[in-house]
Length: 253
Image (cartoon, rainbow, N blue to C red; front, side, top):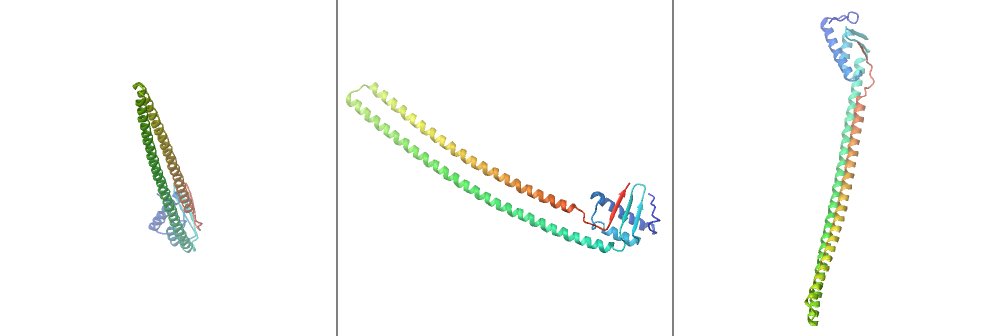
């Protein structure tokens, strides 16, 4: 591809090829970074070009692209080195800040996990206490039912004895026994229903506590994730900004 470079500098063909290679690489870097670049990325090409050309302006033109590199030949090396050093220091500081932020987030998350575990331990203890209370209540109810049954049996025996003593008919005795048995069954059914309702209420309460705790945990985890994402995006946006440089590039077809 023919290049018109006689007006820019008067070197041999291999020097031109090196200059063009560095220029193409630099153009590629600029295109990737939205037509902006960092001084550190182009330090080597600019130093080489300024040292080779020995002039302030270098113009390379072709049939496809025309690139104009405007740079100060006398202060390029010093300024570029200083800018690169400043950029490296800034990047190191930003990396340290990122590491500190990540560790702080991890510490907060670990503290949250510890609190979460403590809350679950408390919930488990409460559930165990409730289960123990339920068992005690059931035992008490069973004892009461047994006592009631014993009392009813004693009453039946007394009634039978009275009936036998007074020569009452067997039909009346059977009817009384049936009525007493029905009453006992009804009482037992009512007690069982009360126990079931009580257990259901306790189970629903425990479930609501667990669900509310889990929902709160999910919300806190989402907030932590959102904060981490926002922090990372801010850091990326900050790093993507190009620092001020003494070199400017103009590229057009």
